[in-house]
Image (cartoon, one colour):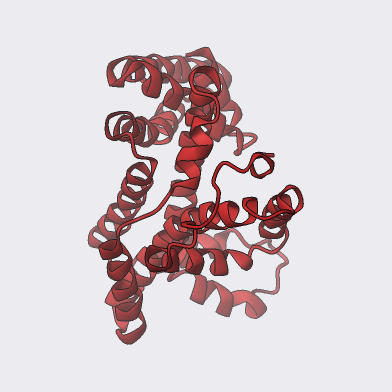
Length: 285
């Protein structure tokens, strides 16, 4: 409770710390079940609210923040604990993001206008507005999907760390096997292709909503593609070099994630891992 609540408030200053806060809730839920996870969530929320009141003078913001931060990871942890398939948990996390995007557009069809106003207010006072206004106009149509994708990525990263902690304590090497086995069903892949194709061929609000959903699907297949390529590189004789270089490349060249996502999508039919040894020792380093 102390770890979750204190890290949640610290993440207001250092945002990446929120992942560790979520991971602590995920660990308890994965190991002890939904009820104890909910107990930690509720207790930590009260603690965060009190800390927020004394440190920030505003308990409502702190309380809302931690609930938004922890509720999704608690739900996904229950899915993973009961379903025992990491792929299912990832798909549900993406589904939550999709429902959020659709719900936001149903609530406010002019979501892009909202984002345009927000982005314009974030500009420095002396910024050459004319030079970047076009970029803002374009980005505003996709910000809902980008923010939702970032939230889903953070959610899954917290879940993965919690699962890794659990495996380290009770089943060494278990998380690695689970992660490298990530995949999805052909019907979901076909549905994803249909969504992108419809977004490309349509126009107006429908196209905008579908493109934002496509951004979330990109997150799904990036995780799967990473697992596929890790497995393939780990099976090579130079695994101790190729696996680290793969992740370094993703960090230095983010655009490479598009190829990774396409690999994840294509693996649904190509099954690139079928001849790869997932237990190559060097691949886990």
